[in-house]
Length: 196
Image 1 (cartoon, rainbow, N blue to C red):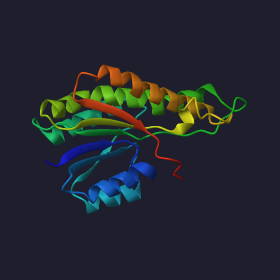
Image 2: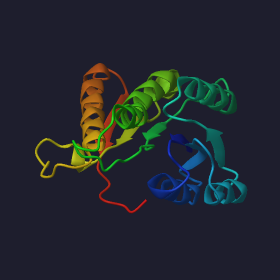
Image 3: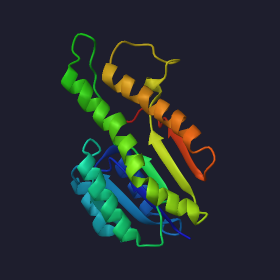
Image 4: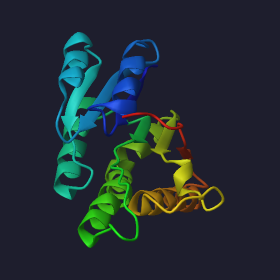
């Protein structure tokens, strides 16, 4: 049976490319929910060209926006289907240093890169559990970065981004314990540096 997948941060970069690749795999996935704060022209083109791709407005730093997205996806999937894959890709990067960091920029980075994905997981969890109950794949994929690794840190820049990706890794690690006795899996990956 084809899968359903929701991806955040699809207006450009990694998210947009994942939607492109997945839309070329109709035997594997037939429901692709491509989300972003605002759709880009390229994302709109993908939605028009592929019946399996649906744009859903979702600002990962806005809880009301997340809840509206859950409602739309739930209605679109219907009463029987669950969500097989949730990809937390949306993020903002900053190149701040201790001399340039501000509370506002740090809070914005953490809201988008950590708090948002946490609330997205919480709100979409019933749909993942529905897939799990049907003995289907239920996976949460958090897009992280090696820049958030304690072992690899070798520079004093991008303070907010580094901290947010460390927190994303801890979120994933902690949730592994939460889901230990369930059929839901959660992983973080580092896709490598991408010019986005």
